[in-house]
Length: 155
Image 1 (cartoon, one colour):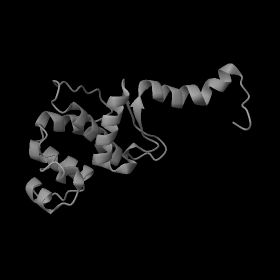
Image 2 (cartoon, helix red, strand yellow; image 1 turned 180 degrees about the vertical axis):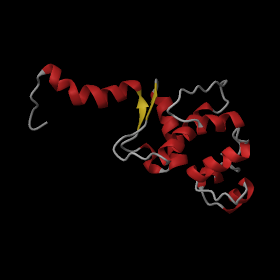
Image 3 (cartoon, helix red, strand yellow; image 1 turned 30 degrees about the vertical axis):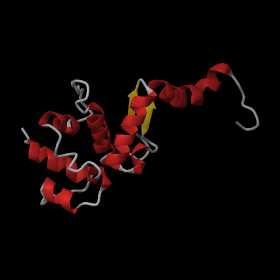
Image 4 (tube, helix red, strand yellow; image 1 turned 30 degrees about the horizontal axis):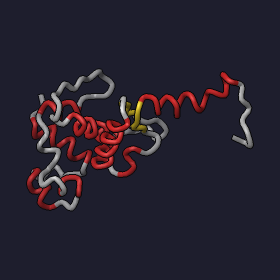
């Protein structure tokens, strides 16, 4: 079983390119990365062992994050998505992070951008509501087959 420090170093190497040789404190002191600088401490090192285990868990297995309000679920989900996106090997396939509300989608997208950079939420990945995903990836591209609408003016 990996310790907090081992998981932290593995995730930090992927998400923020932290060298294994640096401690969290030294990395924070040397960094100009606003991901942590604006928070006054290393955002990854402050995560609990359970949160880091969630981030490191394979997405090929079912995982469940149980937490009370205000415990950092959005932060951890954003970190998990960023961790997966930064190591994603498929240029034409992406990860979909689906929520029920626009507010939740915006918050998670903001965290992903903070952890993975501006390309973290770009194609082929998707962050949004279930409705917007269905509309953009199922209904719009394929509705013409059902309705037999030929298009208008090349559209």
